[in-house]
Image (cartoon, rainbow, N blue to C red):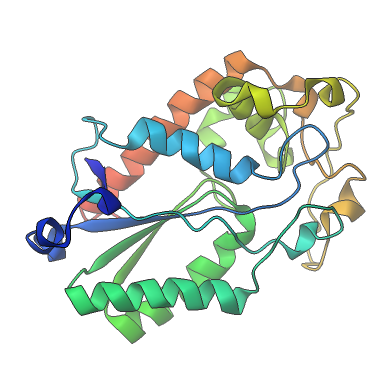
Length: 249
């Protein structure tokens, strides 16, 4: 089960078998998601997922939820107002400070639950360094920058490899879980930008690829698709966390 660590006292937490426990640290971002979605899209997607996962009896492992980090690595979106990014050094420093506190109290396992693709390569790249430095095992569950949504392709009208940012998936998820933040009048004016990310130029920016900042099939989104995707996200995260707890991750 996934329980909120910040609702327990130090005495309750100290009594846990910490070598058997998995701490879960959610990390998202604050960045533009086109003219139709709020800058908090990654955060809201994470919140919706956690609402389904916390205290869910289907999750059998012993998982404890840390408070979220609401900022991430988003320099590719800085051409658009409302995007706030950390430097890689800052995000690393924050995560390292938390891992240090884990080691003081004997925790041995950390799952990074990440809802922003811009964080993925950094967090994966640092895992072995953090293992070597702190003696803590680092696990990853990534919504973006991974194959997480590949098995949901049949639910979508947009090719999965082209639904990159603010597209059918994210718009559908928010139309279902938080419809009041979706700018439906703006959505009706949208046309879908479906560029592939450059193969070799890693310094691309979102504005270079889409004047409105959305990369994907936002016009194909619906609350019905969002409901199906929300159930998919819940089940996918449960399956990945359970695999981690079984030692398969």
